Image (cartoon, rainbow, N blue to C red):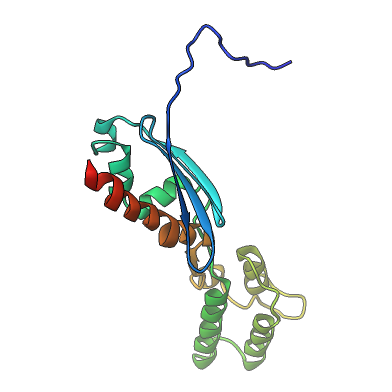
Length: 191
């Protein structure tokens, strides 16, 4: 038995949202559903699915209606609202390159021995470092075959480099710009 049931004493409010189907070159598609009355946006696409409800009140939106709001809002703002998780992730390749640079700098300044530099390089080249925790474990904890950790914790954390997730790039570089371009040219220009 369900704890919730449809309240038949309340009227059902029917509304028509507008759906835009777009194809992308060389391949891909997206369906954007914009509800100008209630202020909702839904995106179903080859690259992911997102939805969000805003207020439809022009005073809250700072725009005459929801279509205008979507066409003028910052791409980053919209993407942050649509993405439910993290929008940045560790760029492992750039981070490992930074650790290599730190290793070379430390060796030139005679802060580490040649043997330690070689051991660090071997761990970097092993190809099994894919996340922050593993990188921190390898480079800041004392390893069984050595007397000291390779580096101080802060030194390694300062080598971390982050970039936008693919989900964020899909929204900010492809989907949202396409929707905004269409709305500006076809909907907002005629109102």
